[in-house]
Image 1 (spheres, rainbow over the protein chains, first blue to last red):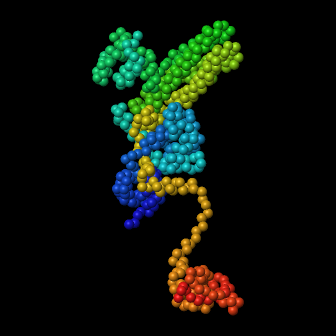
Image 2 (cartoon, chains in turn yellow, blue; image 1 turned 180 degrees about the vertical axis):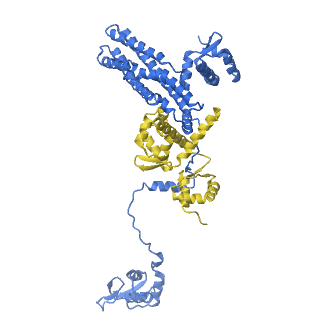
Image 3 (tube, each protein chain N blue to C red; image 1 turned 90 degrees about the vertical axis):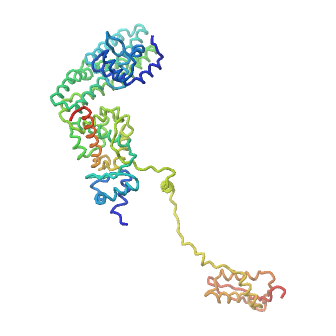
Amino acid sequence: MEFPRYHKDIVSDLMGGKFILASDPKFVSLKESEDFYAKFFRESFAYELEVKTDFAFILSYETGEQLSRDICLFFAVLSFELDKDGKNFLEEIQYAEFEMDKIDEYFQNSSYAELILNNNQMKDSFSRKQFFTTLNRRNIIEKTAENKFTFTQAYKVFVDFAADFAKGKLSVAGVD
Amino acid sequence: MLKAEPKTILNFLANHFDSLKDLFDIQSDEGIIRKEQLMQVLSERNDPIETQLIDYKIIRKIGDDFEFRDVYFKLFEFILNEFRPLLPETIQKYEQSIGKLFSKIREGIKGDNLILKNRIDDLNNEIREFSEAVEKNTIRLLAETRELKSNVEKLDYKEKVRKASFWIDYYIIPLNNILDINHAESITNKLFDISQYVNVRRLNFNDENIRLQFEKLYNFLVMTNDNLLRQSKLLTNELLPLIERIRTESIILTGWIEFLKQPYKSTVPKIFKPERYYPYSNDMYLNAKEYLEQFVTDENILMEDPVANSDKWVFNKELYKDRMLQQLPIDSFFDWCGLTLRSEYKDIETDKFFALTGLLFEDDIFLELDEKEPDRKLIKTSQMTLRVPKIKILKYGIS
């Protein structure tokens, strides 16, 4: 049996919790064989394959809820602080290169100090560095230098979540 | 006198928390709980606790209506992190009480130590209350302004500006004046003066107990001043520019602000959790081996081709002994050894030759050294040339 190109890397990346990005040659191979991989992951491990326009990932019944919550907290505080700083937070997340020192400044001066200090991944500069390593390993950020990074398209998972969350709140408040 | 044990009251608060929270919300909004509102809440919750609420002194009657006793209202404010905004003029009262106590301490510094100690204690309490009032107000103002920014109620821009102006004019600017260190009349400035005075007294006051009181007050003032500075920064960075900040709106930011209200209670997006390897999994042995091997010290390993066992010559003593016996008598034993090996192999290998010479030591062999030939014979093996005497084998055994 012949397997798609990069088969081994595709499987090991996805099984390692990575997002495969459109900029990665593996993405093309995965997209071309989407049906095969969807069936492969479902039949082999009962995982669901999610292929979006510009990234792909797999989901299992048991999910990394703690990490996801930490990532949401990070995006939420960062977006809030960027907006407070007079920036278009979405454009910044989409296109800007972030310096870790600047992130430290935002988090140290945030009015969400209590939430930040109570979160093990975000409580100080050292914890945040380790957290960025996790994000980098998962392809949620891409390190561009020792102390700099950009967000990959995987940010959309979390931004879409925020938009849906708001819609839920708006509908509870009775606003169309 | 309370009609219940303290633990009973605490259990009561926990068991009927939902009804109490509803009543707290009513009082927070309206300042009082009307009798019909109390009945409605208890009936909707199917929680007939009116008698206990009075007996345990959680609420009290005001005419026909009710209100929480202050200690319980503050408890709910604290555990729910929902504080009633205090008007800055209410907070301003601490300026007078703190100022008065401080001047009394200075005036009576050489007077009675007991009253001095009580005044220091009271000053400590007043500063604590002031600091907590400021902190509560900041929390409430942050919540209100985030609400405006989030705008879940979809207020139009005009209404948002009106609300923002209200908070800014009546709460934020006056609170900022109280906290602004650059403002000569601010309480924060007064607290800095007090801490300078207390700093000196904690070091040079002659009574040790009072010195310790000053020390305690000084440490508390240092902490309070840091906290007030932080509150002041929040006001300047986040609350004063409110009008500017509510100009933009984004559904994503609304989502994040709402999420941050209770981040540990919301569902979050699913992300894949890589499988963990358990000790009993099939892959565990190889994974653990691979992991541990990375810590093993590297040593030089020499690889050699294994010697093929099939090539190894094994001396068959019985076979050669029989051959020797068949050819008896043998005129020259070593020549016989050489000839025998050469008949089988191309060269006489030294090992094989020596193995064969072992037959000389067999029991019952009659041998004779030929002394007529003093010169030794030469036998050439693959590795050396051997000089051997001429030995005859005459017979074997009795035969």
